[in-house]
Amino acid sequence: MLKQRVITAIILVVVVFAAVLLLPANFFAVACLIVFLTLGGWEWTRLIGLKEMTRAWAVIALIAIGVIVHLTGLNWYVIAVGVVWWVMILGLLTVYRQDSDFYTSRSWILSLSGLLVLIPAWLAIIRLQSHDPHLVLYLIFLVAATDTGAYFVGKAVGKNKLAPHLSPGKTREGAKGGLAAALLWAVLGASYFGFHGAAWMYFLLLSIFVAAISVAGDLFESLVKREGGYKDSGTLLPGHGGVLDRIDGLLAALPVFVLGLSASAIHQGI
Image 1 (cartoon, one colour):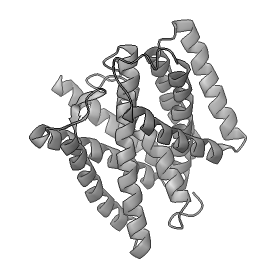
Image 2 (image 1 turned 60 degrees about the vertical axis):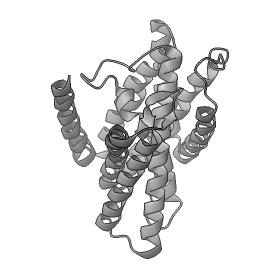
Image 3 (image 1 turned 90 degrees about the vertical axis):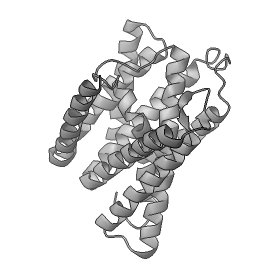
Image 4 (image 1 turned 135 degrees about the horizontal axis):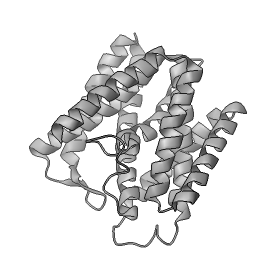
């Protein structure tokens, strides 16, 4: 399993680098549409319990809505809505209880979440790549650093559960280790992009906040899987599960990071 996981990870890294750095903006948008809205949407509809034909129509509707939003120039409004939705998700995570019927009696919440999570993330990543592909890679590795730091620190010294009802393996110590790793990566990133003074501090604070939000993305996918009774979102990626299992943190990080950059003077025109 470890060998399979490593091989898949290497292939993914190569594909991601090539897509982000080499694909023109329009082709990159289509590639991400396939990953986020088609594959991600297909897995999401499985997790929330839709039947196969209904799943197909739901994914088609998801793609149609995303494309219409993009073509009509409503990207920023939907990205902002996505950020607001993630704030609401934070509240849902804090009150989640595994034996509750809150979501089974309100199935529309998880259905709506698919729309408000996947489309803003897709719009955000294509906006970011067209502005500066290196920022896309920075964000991907920021989320990866958070996840990796949390894993190793949690394994080494983790004792206190972060969210026992959602993900028993995650610890508060691990979360702190993840944020520490994210801070280190943010310092390197700020130096690479040439930030100084107030811009340097803003970039670091934004990065740490985005890293924390990425943890919420991971936990929310765990919530959706638990409600659906699944261990993984899919089987497309050997050793890793499904597409959503790999991009869950990124789904939360993307709209927050892009909106945070656009709201500042450090990356005007994004």
